[in-house]
Image (cartoon, rainbow, N blue to C red; front, side, top):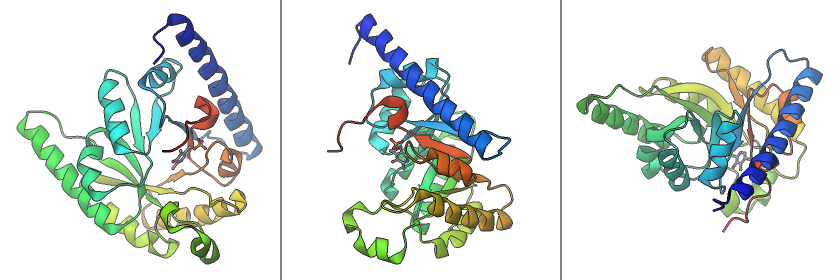
Length: 257
Ligand SMILES: *Cc1c(COP(=O)(O)O)cnc(C)c1O
């Protein structure tokens, strides 16, 4: 990790420039779409070091996203002195629920009912522990249902090991109801990743219509988490409220191991 001050200031300037460019794209796309509210930017810091997160915080970033519990937990602990909101955006195993509820303010990747149960239990236990220690309860975990927007052909063609995750559209409302009635969780809305090899605009339109159905049943659940580095403009046009942008802010990620 570069502790060399010259390397740090160079990295800082690099992040500032990239962040500025992404913010400019967001402003332009919001204006183009005639939106009066600019969506929130969540900077996805996965695979990048604590030092980068610290620099981003100094540059005004408040929301950061991570997709692996071990890495996220370690960063949240190391950077506990910073005023940051941690968004968990990756597939989550039930046995990691206990860990995630300790640092995350939002979970974007709820994809099955067993995970609702695990998160509900974890928040109850966490709050019990905090109460016993004389600490205040945690705020409810904002929970988004992740939607699998692939069509049947795309799902069949996909390598089963690299599913992009998410609940089938037909199951979303039921999962949303379940989240809404679980203590310790607050239904935030929906999230999706545009399927590979198809135009993102139509995928995001489908997501917007699912989001509207969810809002009809749960008026407060108004988050639409959509849009990454390469498709944030299309997501903004379709009404995204939260963008998850990694590489266009931080640079290319090291290859996934
Ligand atoms: C990594 C990741 C992102 C950010 O992707 P970029 O293309 O680097 O902007 C967004 N959403 C999810 C779910 C991710 O895993």
